[in-house]
Image (tube, rainbow, N blue to C red; front, side, top):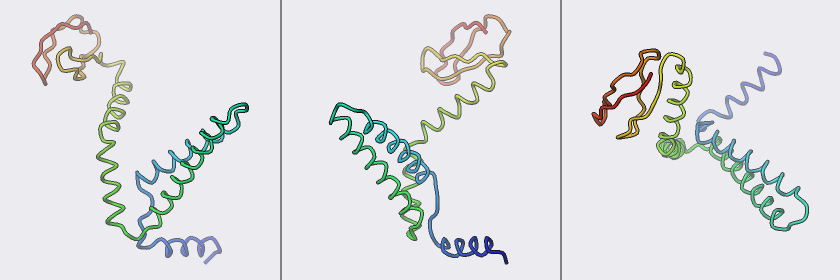
Length: 148
């Protein structure tokens, strides 16, 4: 067994039974990085003590996010960490869905014309090149004309 294989096996043994990384941990990691970088930039601004204080505060928040992220990853209380992650995922579900749907709309923008229903603001689509069509929303049953 090589040196690196021994290191890998030692880390696997250490992490056995621990929570590890999940979506909340990754959000904490990225949020901490952004807060720390903003804090560093604001601290470098000369001439105002308020910017320096805000920069130090943001750096402290970023560091606290890192510490909490590492704590979550190495925690052996898997039930509590999983419950925290489930709450985070439920809280961010709407934004993740909107982002995923925007990606699909962008990928299909050459095949379909996307628009919103004037009644309920739901996203609708019609194939491009069909001319002016009468559309009925499947959610609120509002009928209107739309150019495709």
